[in-house]
Each structure stands twice: as structure tokens, then as C-alpha cells.
Image (cartoon, rainbow, N blue to C red):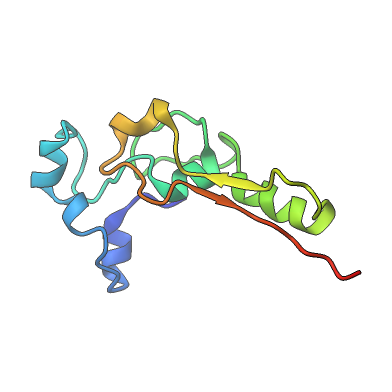
Length: 114
């Protein structure tokens, strides 16, 4: 659920550098955000869907819906479920995101041995 592009850059993962820059955040009306604060993007939606977003430094433990944990649980315990879905698309948070998600949904299909 990490939304800090600076943490990724420190690991030489540069995919979010442009979207966490001062100029880009300002252009999206997010000038109040610290450089690197991507807002409630992918990881936040996957781990804390529905939780109110504050900053990249806030502790969101136990807040919102942990979709990733739910998907893993369903794959392990109810693999025939057709609703094992992970969503990054949250219309309520789109304006808070540095960049709305390009990859929005993932549906898991588990084929069990017969």
C-alpha cells in the first residue's frame, strides 16, 4: 500500500518519478502534496480500498478493505469463486491520485485438478 514514489526511486525504480514531481502534482491540483506523494494509487487501493487518504506518511494499518488479502484467502479457501477480483478503480479517489490507474482490474480464475 506504499504511495511514496521516493521509496521506489531509492530502489532505482523510476516508473513514478515524473508523476510524483512538483510540476506534475501542481498540474493535477495536488500542490498541497509533498514531492513523491502519489495519493491513493494502486497499492493503496489494493490494501486499503475505501479508507480516507491523508498523506504518504500516514499509517493505514487496518483501514479500508484489504483486497489483496481477500483474494489470497479466496484462492486458498474458495478457489471456485468467480468473484476473486482486485480493483484499483475507485471513482471517489480519482481526483486524489497523481495519475488514475491504467490497469484497473484483475480477476483470478483458479483451475483445480480434477
